[in-house]
Image (cartoon, rainbow, N blue to C red; front, side, top):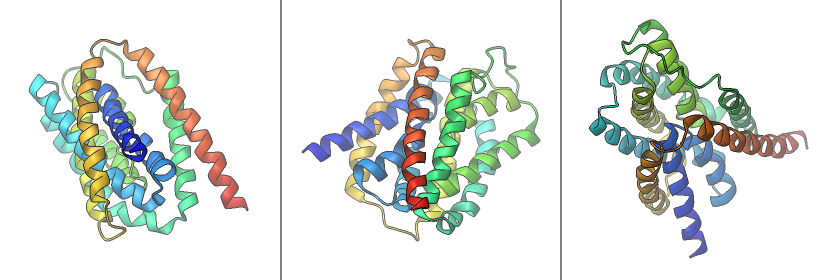
Amino acid sequence: MPGLLLDLMLGFGIGFSLGLLGGGGSILTVPALVYLVGQSPQAAVTTSLALVGANSLVGASLHGWQGTLNWRVALVFGGAGMLAAYLAAGLSRLFSPNALLVTFALLMLVIGGLMFSGRAHAPRSAANAPRNWPAALAAGAGVGLLTGILGVGGGFLIVPALVMFVGLPMKQAVGTSLMVIAATSLAGLLGHLNGEPLDAALMVIFGTAGIMGIWAGTRLGHRVPADRLRQGFAVFVIALAIFLLVDNLLRLLI
């Protein structure tokens, strides 16, 4: 029972983060699956892609009903990401488990720093019309590369990219980000299916709790100031990244 409760709490937290901020699911999922559930880093990457992809698809559907999802941008940005994620999926096998987590921690530090400083926060005055499609394709491919190698959906990279490079309003960027995460996660998952098998029972538990978290996070996101949420989550991401970095660097050096 304690294990089931932990899985439900973790699944809810992952979905809640996605619903509230349009990202963050993978940043929480991979370390949680490795350190709290006991999966290997490679299995955690595959499970993360499946869970985050499914939860993001549910969240994108909610935004679609609310009219805050730009399908055309999701198709272009996500298409480039899917191709890159699929092609890069096999690269994770070239790294040792500890090196994979060190790389993940460094990425978390960068994202957390950008979030806390506000540089990853898109300006409210962004234009409504999409623009600079070559940059959108390049950004989508970059996010897909990270997704395939590290199991990172890239929400905290996608949202600012959609606003600054593509020109979407912030609310549309969050909804569109979830659809892009779902697409790139699916492509990355297809590239990982010949690795360690997925734990079906764990997927059901995490997925069910994640859907409830998505719903709760989406509702709360309309009430809490975005800047306060962003900075609080950034502190958590940085703290978790430091823990991962210290632990795995010591293992690599010993």
